[in-house]
Length: 63
Image (cartoon, rainbow, N blue to C red; front, side, top):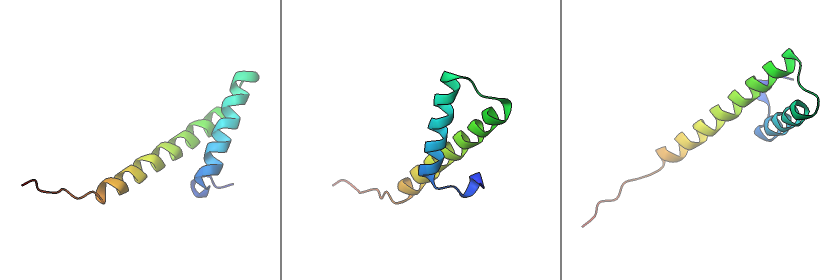
């Protein structure tokens, strides 16, 4: 599956699956790399959403 086009809910679900597996049995190198890529996708999404929210904020003048 193309990780860049995954829904954010699916990204979070897979991050959690990999985290759980890392605590239970450990991850192989490919899974560690996948985990890092998914975390980057998640962080970038949070930043993008926060930036979009900030762009809608309007300053009001006080009297």
